Length: 355
Ligand SMILES: [Zn+2]
Image (cartoon, rainbow, N blue to C red):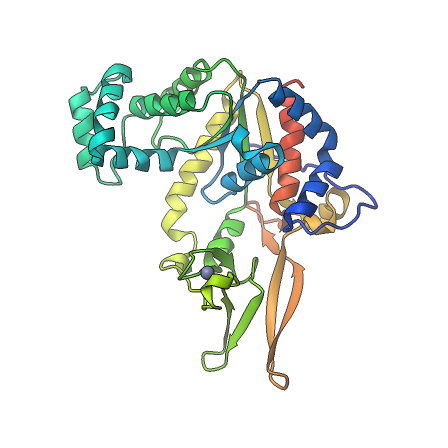
């Protein structure tokens, strides 16, 4: 088991920040990690980069953290390489008559493995989603993406499934040697319960597809359906005309459909932790309630929203409290908002890179 230390981001007497507001978030980052931001800026402006491998369960916020890194240092300096998206992109290339040929040429020239290129292409074309692509092929395509993004910081999100211990370390060794800049593992710990609640209360706008959360991230318009006796969110995007947001099919099942996947993600994380020679950044999302006061400012904790219906005035009343969950050890905890986790990421990255 990997021990994730609690990271202290608390500053006594810190002003309150609304971390959902991009401008205030910027000021918050300056207050909490101004020195590290300056060092990192200098490093990046000098033309240096790094590759960070994000490891953590599905829905652990990997995309959010790299997006916020881009928010601080400039989107053009950062590339979020999602392996899942990349593989879906390969499917599209195969179907496009112009791109198909150059992809096949690339595979012939770069793939070193045990399948013939023709077999590979057959596998790619006849593949059901459950069938795994050879690791060597994924490796070759990852390298192609890395080469396309010279001069950028790369956050690699996701790994080939079903790697055994040896294949796993070979995968990294091979990538680590591919580009000359430093590599860092970023291991992310999020309790199952946090992921489950995010899924269960998720609502989607049927028009613009924006995703919000009835319990954790409401819109400005919270409604009450008197017939069904339930609360709902209306999309606050002006173009959507206050349309009622809906649940996505399967979300009510919570973690069940992805439990196996989450177990594998966790195993990969543990394996990465044991791999020597690559510095590691440890990010944790949950803070035990009895430690929160010492380690974090209250505005860094994810709030939860509960609603009651005021029958007399015909309006919804909102009650805001810190969101309480149990971590994977069963300890009552608060869940941090993304920005304090990014502060911890910045500080640890500066140390890992020796800046
Ligand atoms: Zn909408």
